[in-house]
Image (cartoon, rainbow, N blue to C red; front, side, top):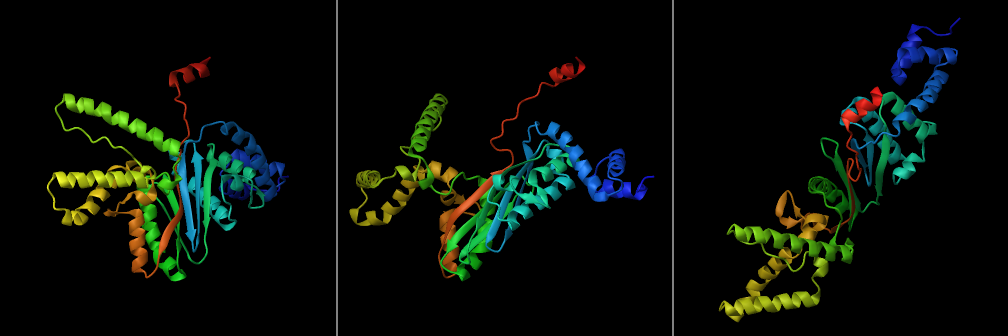
Length: 353
């Protein structure tokens, strides 16, 4: 005689979201023991999950958790955007980001190698795959932990497709407290403007040289078309990054600007009032790569009269101290994943063969 009834089957189904008949089989195999029945379903689910594990998971969502001087960001991929929007997937996101945050797991490798709810993370994830019905991958994660003088914050875009965590080192705990909401604004900026690095100092010289060459060729080709149409030609920059603007380059630029002022008949006694603006324009025209890819050099979206670095300095000064952004992590769902285009007709033919 079975040691369970319809209520037990219903309860197991609610716990695991497995099919009614599967729950009945599980309880039969476990002789009515609920925990053993869950384990039985998990073991059966491993087979189903294994089939799904080969599916490319390029959709998904980003989760961020921030408390005090600590922030965690996690990307979990699914196969479809539809699944990424359902409540079960969101519950997994919440559980994983909280698990990673509480245990200070620094990256995806650490998360995947951890234990959660008394089981290996791989077993936990396999159960979620079997329940949700799609392959799930904890692909990327990052952790920021600071002390009392480190301001930390984060932001996830409303669609869950990109998120940012960020930290700034401050001169005091008081300044750090004042800068925390400011960093949320900068995290929102980073989510929207997609910087790839913090500063031009992070660039490889070979990368900058290659980018310079490519941009010059592209503008030259564009100018050929503009010339054919009788339109104004675009300026071809000599440089694209502050890393190229050495003391010698700046000295030469200043000398050229002085010659221009002389040719324009400007009195030498007023040059010191004109030169700073012209030098600033020269730097702006020749640091386009930094402005596109470096967080600190981008024009702040909420006030494009200043860069992000200048905005941080201004806010820190207003708080009576100083602050410097030391790190940020921006993740966007699926970036870098190659998804094969499926030939639907061929797939149908294959199934019919």
